[in-house]
Amino acid sequence: MMVGEAQEKHPARQRLADLVEMSLKRCERAAWKLGRAQLEADASAEALTAARQGLDAWDAANPDPQLSLIEAIHSNGGIA
Image (cartoon, rainbow, N blue to C red; front, side, top):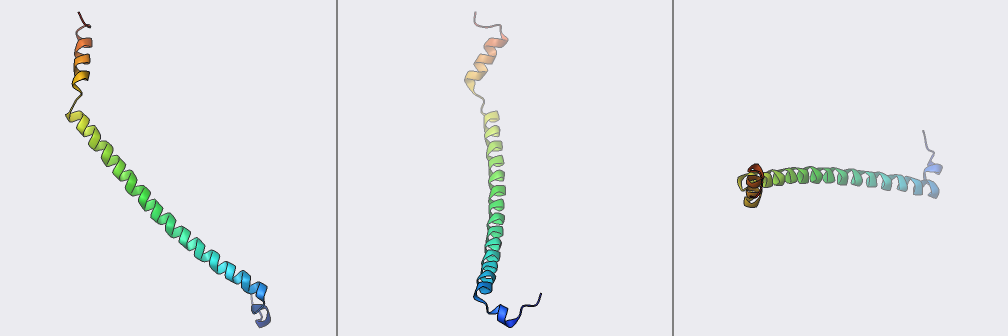
């Protein structure tokens, strides 16, 4: 579409052209922020997985002594 010189200088058209430019920049910033947020979400999910694995490993290596006593009581038919 060809825009004539008179139309190009029209204030209403210029305001709309400026709005298009600002909206494009806003979309670009939002896309950048979304990309950064996705990176943060991925990193936090990896950290959560690692922390849970560490906790599970610690719990496996350090069983609760009271739980062991309860299991022993139940396996021997209860308290006499």
